Length: 329
Ligand SMILES: [Mn+2]
Image (cartoon, rainbow, N blue to C red):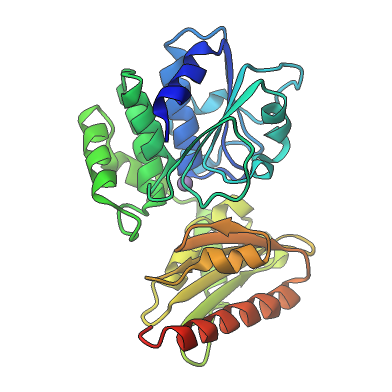
C-alpha cells in the first residue's frame, strides 16, 4: 500500500466524492464519514458523501450522517472518488457512475480483490476493517484525528469485528482502537448504539426468523429464512436483518451459518458466516458474491425455496470436499 501516493491524490484534488457500498454497514459508513469529517477541515471546494441507500437508523448517531446524500444531482465531475469497503465498483450501486466519471479513483478496502477499477488502491485483506486503513492513511498524512473522526473509525472496527469477538481482530485492530478511544471515541457508546438499541420491529423479526431455524443432519450447517411475508408480519425492513445470522452462527457445533432473505420476489440475498478455517467467501463467489473468509454474501435470483436448496447443495458439497482434502478438519 502506498499511503504517500494516496495522500498526494487527496491533496491535489479540489473536489472529492466519498462512496460506501450499497446496504452500507458500520465500516463503510464509518470510513466514509471519518474521512468526510477529516477532509472537511481541509476546506476542499467541493466535498461530498453519497450512498446508494440512505443511512440505516442504527448508524444515525455518527457525526455528519445527514451529509450522506442518497439522491445527488448527477451533474458534477469530481477530481477524486474515494470508494470505501468494496472490491467491485458495482457494489456502489447507483453511485458507481459518480466514481466512473471522476478523474481519479482511490479504493480503500479490506476485501479479497475482485476487479481492478481504481487508479490507486489501499487494500489490505489482513485489516479487520476498512476504517483501520483510513486511520493509517490519516496518520501517514499527519492529519489530525478529532474525536468525531475517531468515533466514526472506531465504529467501523467495532462493527466489522463484532465488538472484537470475530477472529479477524488483530493486535493492530486493538492498538488502533485504543488510540481512537484515547482521541475521544467511545467503544461503550458505539456498542450501545449499534448493538443495544434495536427497534421493536427488528426484535419481532428476529423472533419470527429464528423460528425458521434448521440444521443439517451432522449439525455443522444451520440456517434461517426470511420471506416477504415474514417482513410484513414483523413490520420490518431489510436493514433490520442486521446481526440475525450471528445467532445462527453461535450454535455449538455449527461451522457454517446462513440467512436468506427475500429482498424482492425472486431476489434472495444471502449472508454467510463461518467459524475458524471455513472460507464462506469461496461459496459466495460461486454465486458472484464475495466477502471475507468468515463473513460473506451473495444474491440468488430465484424463489426462496429454490434458493434454499441451491445454496444448501453448494454448502454441503463444499463441506464434503473440504473434509476429503483436509482430514484434520
Ligand atoms: Mn468492512
